[in-house]
Length: 406
Image (cartoon, rainbow, N blue to C red; front, side):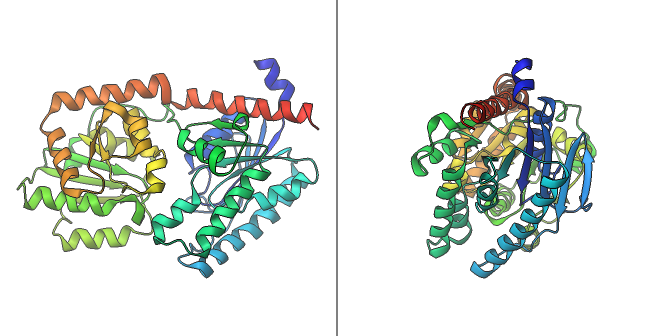
């Protein structure tokens, strides 16, 4: 295998728009895996809090950052966001080309317009890998709940992205099916590379009881705080637990940041729950591990919609890696990942979500069993050490294709 890696090693330019690197865990894991396999990796990404440098080299990976465009909320807002990022990305791609060179553009969506940069470079013999992180048409629907012209533009951009891609990388089987059935990608050129957790990063250690603030139980969430992430359901479940079930022994810890954070905080105050909810914002890995290792259960309140049903959530895999039992809504890919390490409540039913939380809290032996099941699934099937083998397989195929079809 080492011989093949050396034979096909090349230079890769990864472009990602929505998160800075190395904060974007998947992109950083992919970059390190490719570097370890003998590839030279450069990355173009936005700046972000804690990642303000325009350029830095980490672990022999060159990172070029541009200003983060303002997030769009309507057609003109999206147009401005995407065009601004596109101009920065194309400019930096030229900089990387002349400074370090690249053989492959590896584009991570959203959005689905990065293929335009790849299409330009394909004129000069470069190859294009599409790393399908989000299904953008469904993401638009879950945000705006309407099929207007922008929705159909996103469908067109998705199809064109797959048309220009030499290979595509899907995060799960649902995304692979979309690539093949909706966008007519050759099945032999679609590779599933799951966003498996790195077990060297997610370390299990004893709980820190002080985090519970004197309560018996801790329920934790980690992730982006946007409207589609469903924190409203968790707040409503907590109110149900307090008011209907008259249970007051639970503390909640919410790790993460996002555009919906202030609304969620205000809802906590409105419901009289601000004393039992801690909002940490983005925290270091050390602080994150301290909280999650203390949690009795972890939750994924992502609402049921076409986007979430077909998407694999990193937080679910991280909960499993730390041996935590989970409560989530009935979602296709959520169940595919967690299986018996999770309980599944009725779709978008906050009261049933609350009942599942209480059932788990009242059954310590079941919590332990479910946590062990989740950890075993990660170790044997879903950890990054397993996923990265598929990434290298995809790249070996790509460079064999280049060799056979220059």
